Image (cartoon, rainbow, N blue to C red; front, side, top):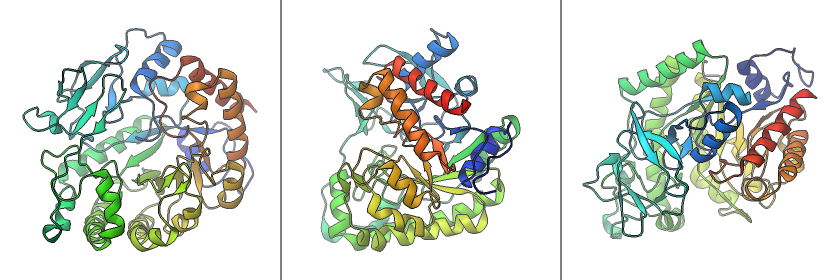
Length: 430
């Protein structure tokens, strides 16, 4: 169908599919909250519900406790007319299940929210909170939330490194074949969304993000071994490359088997799958060379992506922050279909240039508004103008799902959030 618009009255699922096939849908496709990189801080979700639904006393569920992201449930998704729902792994970054809930008060602003029942923490004399793996306060904490913060930071738990005793398998303890219960969990979640909503379905696939620095500290483990310090891991990708390579080999071996299992039961009910959150960029450009990416990461990412493309019609989503422009051609060759967050403020990430050079090969999922400056600190007019400009650039001939540049933080003013949604509504009327 090329650049011609699809017929009006598409479902959200059809709209997402058209956008990912680089076709014009009946209107702009929009995601908020389908993934752990496309969501909104829980306090902001609470204010948004009050503004749009009049729910001043509603307690929002924290569906991603590490970043303290709030749930965009069906009522709110319909109110903002978002098109995508997310299926997350059965346990979160602290090893908690999300089947029972209890109240929690955010330390910064006193917002009352709901957290998983095993969300257990301790508090020090400064009022800072410490989270413990699996909610077990008898073991050392794995993350800290300063009393002035809205989310957690990993606690350094690196044991002394003895070079001749380093074992790559210590960094593979978190990778394993999916249990029948976990496979059933994913199937039941996907089936429910497929049969009970018309939304596009986004799946977060666990265990195949090679070198994702958020996962290296293993905040869900009570006694992580191997290289678990953020700085030490980055150093190791240069000076202990054989070690890292062996970790990736084992991770890839297990990941390929898990893909086969899930593909067999989910079929094509899933439309897009998140496989990597590994950041390769900084504000001023990539922090590894294209050759280093080709040598260490690309072979494993390509093996994973090739298997997914072989077995399914899923589009493959990579999240990588910063100025990654020099790496984009290799990411495309590695088999990625969707790029997020499209950090337009970073070096080399000009939206017009990205759309011109890669718009027929990549779907841009994000880039809709700057979450570092414009959204939290600009005026509502600034937000409206930037959102409108980004939609005009990225949505040309589609291949675009609107989302902000990374998660909307909890302290964003409600006026700016409403300006964002106003710009989306106006773009959808054109």
